[in-house]
Image (cartoon, rainbow, N blue to C red; front, side):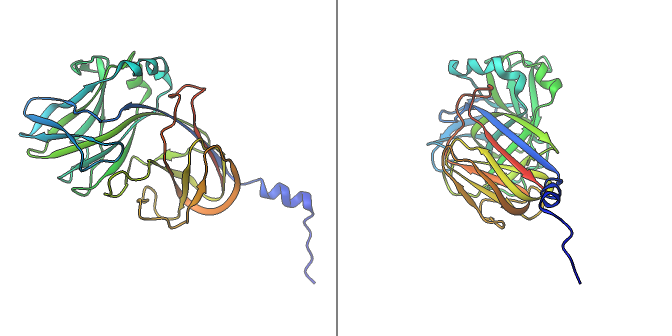
Length: 295
C-alpha cells in the first residue's frame, strides 16, 4: 500500500528549495527624441512624426554617405544634470531604434559623452556601445546595451548622447526614440536583459517593454513593486525570443502600486510592458520595477 511519508513541514521545506532570482530596475529618461538631433557631416536630421514609439516624434537621420564617425547627437537638457550624480549606478543604455536597411552587428553605436558637442575622444570623455545586428529592415527594436564598469569610470558627467557610425550604410535612414539609462540590480542567479527584441511596427506601442532572460525555468513569479500599470508576460520560448505579438505564457495585468504573488507559470523569459516611465531617476529613492522568480 502506498503511503504519504511527508508531513506538512517536509513539504514546506522542499517547496522552498528551488533556485530563485530577483531583479530591480530603475531608469533615467535622458532623451525623448521630441526634437531633431544635431547632424554630423553628410547626414540630414529631422523630426519624424509618422514613425514613433513614444511621444509625438522620433529623431530621424538620413545618411548621404557611408559614415565612420558622428552621425547625430543631442546635448542633454539641464534638467538631466541631476542624473550625473547617480552615474555610478548605471548598468545599461536603452532605446527604441529602426533602420530602413538590415544592419550588421557593430556597424552602429550609441555614444555617451562628457562634452555637449559630442566631440570627446573615445575613452577620453566619450564611451561607445555597439549595436547588435538589426535583422530586419523597417522594423522597430528595443536595444538594451550593457555599460561596463571600465567605461562608466570614464564618464565623470554626462552632457550629450549620440549616434556613431562604424562604416554605416550609405543611404540608410535611422530612427531613434526614447533613450534611457538603466540601473539593473540582480540578486541570486543573474537575470539578464535581452540586448534586442522586436516591439512591433505600430506607432506608440504601449509604453516601454523590458524583456528579461531568466537564468532558470521558472515555476512562479512574485511582483514586489510595480509603480505603474503594466502587463507581465511570461514567455516559454527561446531566450530573447519575445516579440510584442507573442504572449505564449499569457499575460498578467497589474495596476499601479499593486504587488502580487506567488503566481505560477513556466517561462524562460519575461516581458514587462508598462504604460509610464519610472520617475525619480536611478537613485535609491526612485521608482523601480522589482520582481522575483523561483525555479
